[in-house]
Image 1 (cartoon, rainbow, N blue to C red):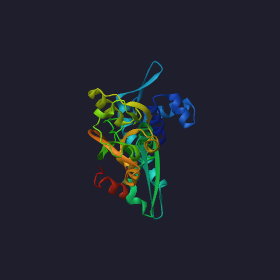
Image 2: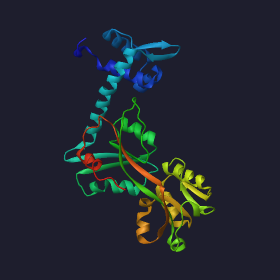
Image 3: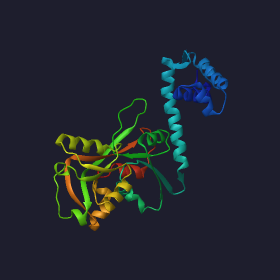
Image 4: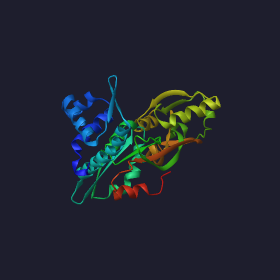
Amino acid sequence: MKLDQLNFHHLFYFWRVAKLGHLTRAAEELHTSQSAVSAQIRQLEERIGENLFVREGRRLVLTDTGHLVQAYADNIFGLGQEMLGRLQGRSAGITRLRVGSVATLSRNYQENWIRPLLADPTVVLTLESGLLEGLLARLVQHQLDVVLANESVPADPGRPLHCRFLGSQAISVVGPASRWGAQSLRIPEDLDGVDIALPGPRHALRAQFDTLCASAGVSPKLRAEVDDMAMLRLIARDSGWLTVLPEVVVQDELQAGILVAVGHSTALQERFYAITTPHRHRIELLEQLLVGTPQT
């Protein structure tokens, strides 16, 4: 078969069934009937000369040829989605950069990372936050250009991603200056029974802190656990409790003397990563941010 004999409409229908693993769901997504989807795939199989699926009970399972065709279809339609995403974000003299960040990431860190772009009148920024898996799904679909996260992404051949380490920073225990200004604490030894606010269980830092306290036999008095860093910042400022967080979250309050850092531990580190797709269209502004000096 020659390239001009390949029907990309048939290939697209096959690709959606292969990705969703279900004929009915693919038909619903494509707003057509199951019989129409089946007919398109049969025609593709006839052109190729091999079966792409075999039926095991009620399931459609890819053949070896089906896996091969799917791998190429991933590249073909992935690049097509990327092209449309870039075209939709481009207008005369304007560059649109679409940045996702996990909900547990400090907004101050995100602002510091994009700060070089804030004074550029030719840049339009789209900033989203959410759970990591949802953001990665949008990244793979080329609806985002980069995802900022505080945890790395495991290697997955089915979802190739580039994970670039941006830097790390020490975690501090902070409190209101009016109450804690004259104190310096050993972390975690001096936290036993102390009122404390912590990042929520989904935050990468939380497991580090819990492990550190458990190994020292220390049990702080948990008063709040908060996923959102902006809310944790408000609690640190207004509650009177100690709070465990990256200093970048409360950088303004520390500089103003409203809060003070009463202790640190080298065992507590937050790491930052920029996640992109391997076929990402080169965006010069993003490249400049990625190759910049890691923030610590």
